[in-house]
Length: 92
Image (cartoon, rainbow, N blue to C red):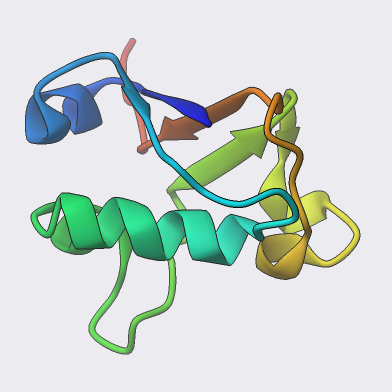
């Protein structure tokens, strides 16, 4: 499954997109766990001290914020889903 990282997260992973080998039916949460396993420095960018995802971080699956999907982070994904991870972005 291909995941694209945006803004400051690209610096943490060292590239724009990364392939993750997950089984069909894996959940958004399982993908998040695999991202953190492979890139431990993402933990400080994505999760608070209690292990909850920061409200300013968004994982989009096929253009929809995972928090608004049927089962949020427990939503099952397909291998061809398009995933993007966005930190808070400011500007003016």
